Length: 274
Image 1 (cartoon, helix red, strand yellow):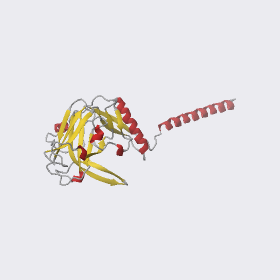
Image 2: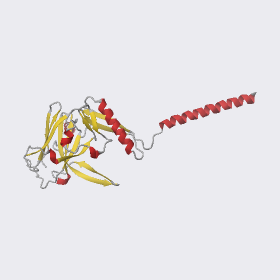
Image 3: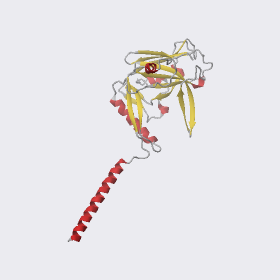
Image 4: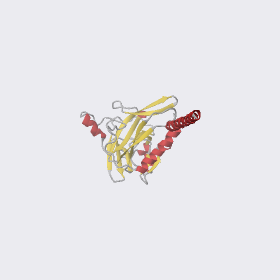
């Protein structure tokens, strides 16, 4: 009787142990992270458009491992080679440079900064548009699945997007004749939108994501007119370059960008002397 009782209990113990191990393996298996899985968390920063800021900058091209791209940098001093010149056009719901001056009262407001830095990106936020955020997330996830390569570590990507539509945007020169155009005349046709930051274009008509992370960057609107035809929301930043060779760019040129929002707000900014 003892032997039978012992064998029965031994078998029950083994069954329990095997069952426990199976549960552990199943739980562990459900927690395994694919070495190629993207772990990026999107943190959204919605802002209306009430401030326009533009600045000149210098492109720096890079190549590494068969890949290439462009760095959008501050100008070094007051000069830039014509082929490397770009103009950044940025929007926000407040002027971050005001925060710079609070920290450093001697900060030069005319200092060229191709991309505005927000000390706390989660301050001064406006009401989000959940439908847009869902579309951006879906586009990013599709892009991540397609481009995964090697192990990626958990990180957070702040996604600035604007919730105000743009009706008009005009680039002109102040007191300078460029491309045969008189001061104040539109120079839009002589600029190409070389890059969007972030890589999204939202139409204010139906709050639709027209272009996102999953789209080929070559398919994005390249001209200001093409972009405006989409009834776009404002962009955090656009980098514009000349699409036509310009010789002897006057050292006294200053660019003016005027913008009209869908709410009827008229905005304008002028670059410093270059």
